[in-house]
Length: 170
Image (cartoon, rainbow, N blue to C red; front, side, top):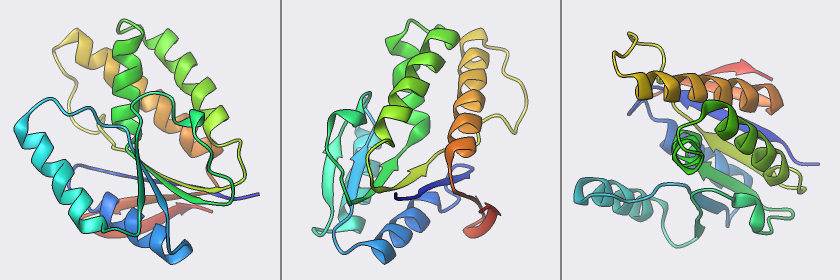
């Protein structure tokens, strides 16, 4: 049975680069699952920069909601990122935290059921102040629940702070 590794931290903390290095240390041809939906040109440029940095040895899959529909047996799989996956679930289920969380848990469990190594990148978004926007507060609640669930199911958890990885579990 493979292992599940969660990498968390703030925006631009170095999570993706750390995850990519880790995946490459585990496989010559890892699988990259992109959960992002591209809505504007600025974000499209970020996605293109990520693709260019990874290079041709990666197999890329774009899947915003249901990554369990693909086969990963014996692969090293990097999913980037859980936050955007949770965002997609949040809107898919009408901004209902309970429904989105339930759907996320079911899909996550199905996703990691196959024998493979999984590396998941997420964001710590609730460490700042409380938003005055009700929708943002609901999403922050969902993200906190999702991160806790994934961390509980993970064999190892790393926190990235200013580009420095700190192992906090495993």
